[in-house]
Length: 484
Image 1 (tube, rainbow, N blue to C red):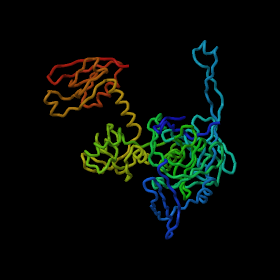
Image 2 (image 1 turned 30 degrees about the horizontal axis):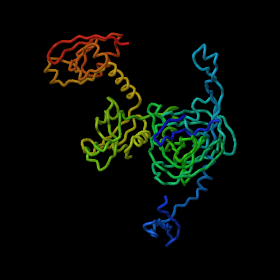
Image 3 (image 1 turned 45 degrees about the vertical axis):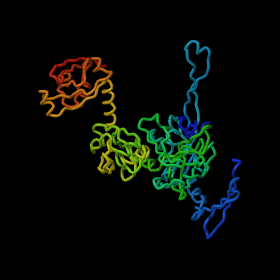
Image 4 (image 1 turned 90 degrees about the vertical axis):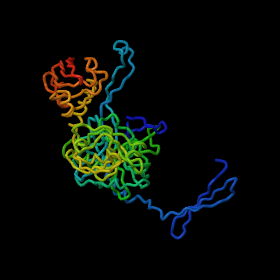
């Protein structure tokens, strides 16, 4: 499983195991006044010899033995069996059926997992166990257990397993929010079926979206990027800090060959904790939603809103009845923070929201017309999003947009109720001959006063839609069309 990313033709791959002449530099290290000092000697044709000195206030300890020893028993080998469908060239089959013959055969894969409770709960990646027919967990001391799949979440590529065991080594949760760019981290897993492999690197970036889950509706990507060596088989393994605390679940690499090339990605533990808690309690993830469509803020939008720099997330569209709509957010607002966490990228916004459940309340900071505001928001659930999606599908089918009329407008047109058609493009309305500015007063005998009345009336129809109303000049109109 892979998807392309604009990294000079590199590919993002899940880390799942399947069976100059003019100048030169001389660098020397010295200790001056108990500080590490690097002396750089530069030679060039125009300037034969010059020196510059850079001082660093102490070097960070790079001894990872304590952290590795404390965590290595908390990482397990996850081995799965599944059914693989392959195609092979059978000329006879191809001639009669016009397609390659399908062959079904058993296959195996392996990855890693992290023990999060002494009684046998283990977190891993969804893609490690997806479609598996059996799951085996092998501990670092080589004890083997059959594992039960408690739940999985494709949107974050996480899954929860359970084995019948006690007194297991647990890797404690750390705080991925506190990670800093350049901080040392350690990856532990089972690459290439090599049990309990430890590698080290630094945090290269945070809140990285690499579009590896773009096939999943509502996918959440806010990866920790590291240069710790991660290879096939590392998926689901631990990313820990120097204190031996879990800060991420290793998930993917960017590579031209399928093997490590300096770019590894992990799901931050801030997301892991919420997802796993939901899987334990509910068997599925309780996902909070704002009910908005968003884009990154442009330089022009930042300038128009008097922002000191390009920051925040631009609200492109607010879903009717969603959390953002109920809190008073409008199209064009710029969200700056959620729950006190800055949201300067879409990935940061997704990570911030992923910590909440439907019904949770928190503070949301935003900018409107250059003025900063704060509002309390109550998160909604998938029902609002599903309803909004159905509404968009209906509007696309009708090929029209609508506007609710004020009491003064209705009085001017001599009407008691009605919704005005604002625009008409290709769709049912255009084919029926309904023009712009037409005011719909009834659909199939039901009075229309709100846009939601239109949706309700059409949804209740049994194949035929009959529309009555008038144009602003008083001309009456009657239209009909069929729907499936």
